Amino acid sequence: MNYFSDDSKYIANTYKRFGVVLTHGKGSKVYDADGKEYIDMASGIAVNTFGIADEKWISAVNEQVGKIQHASNLYYTEPQIKLSKMLCEKAGMKKVFFSNSGAEANECAIKTARKYADMKNPDKKVILTLINSFHGRTVTTLTATGQDKMHVSFGPFTEGFRYIPANDIEAFRAEIAKGDVCAVMFELVQGEGGVLPLEKAYVDELVSVARENDILVIVDEVQTGNGRTGEMYCYKNFGFTPDIVSTAKGLGGGLPIGATMFSEKTENVLTAGDHGSTYGGNPICAAGAVSIVERLDAELFAEVKKKGEYIKEKLITFDGVKSVSGMGLMMGIETEKPAPDCIKACMDNGLLVISAKEKVRLLPALNISWEDIDKALEIMKDAFKN
Ligand SMILES: *Cc1c(COP(=O)(O)O)cnc(C)c1O
Image (cartoon, rainbow, N blue to C red; front, side, top):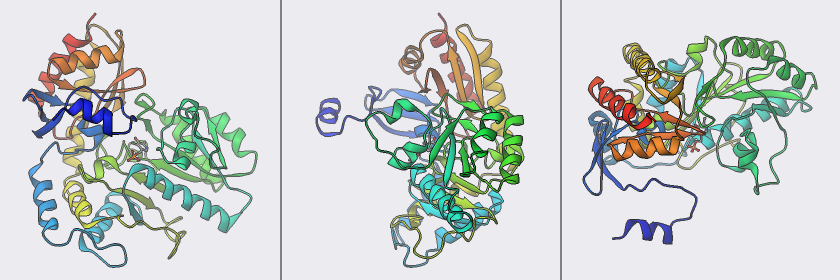
């Protein structure tokens, strides 16, 4: 089988892939079709929360596969209900809607904000998002995504979105002064945008101004969620509770699941028939997610923070590293050499890392061992230097 030529012949050309075929792995070790070993600091883009072929996740998924693989949302299924309770308790939210991806979780958040506005003041329908944000690839979540570059060729777009620069509270005030804004939606650490955390003072003020003006605060935790930043959700690092939270990526530990969570203010906005998903909260994905979420606890979060700090402290001393940004085990490295060259050098030497804009991005499994961290750091030290 010729992987590369068959891929380019039969698969739509939407991905610029690294020239490696991954076949299997264990924890933070992954192997390619030639048997070469890599330390995995990509986790399938923050998805494989406890690494590859994690035993607890495998048994949870396997057990569910043998019971019922799908039921549709016309019926109750146990894993979905179990997961919803666990998530709401850990997130401090009231209700959850399950879907299959980050984009869908955001679509649901957007629909909810629009309906909330409709119930209260139909003249206020605009949703503000941040410049340089990323919210997904569907037409509406692409519209929400504040990056002109990604909009080329795909218009006309969904109406009712405007963009504001991050960390500029006056820009936010100016937009809401127009009187038509119902919600503001943002990532607390812009992932695809270059692993850029928002400033705490800005977030504090944004949330308080939004509250004063009955503007819904929607936080996109698709990438930052599920322990990634050393808290269950990143808003815990910032000390507030959003009105709507979306998440996906790490939630399923490798199976597709998205979740949109609602606070007391928004829990009853959507009613029967307003929204749905055939696969949403599928029992296999939900069972896998339960096995992930039940392990997201204070002890793990402390470990994630400790490992993140350790990696950051080391990286910043390396030759060829200009800066390191991020939170917990979500990091962006500004290198002197172009990021693609650094990533290639890492791969050649047995380490998988990815990019975010002009940076090298690290998203290791939350349980990556100290030994693998040290090995990965050695490889990066070599790969980044001029
Ligand atoms: C990945 C990502 C999305 C989109 O998720 P998909 O599962 O690819 O649809 C949305 N928002 C953020 C912040 C993301 O990182």
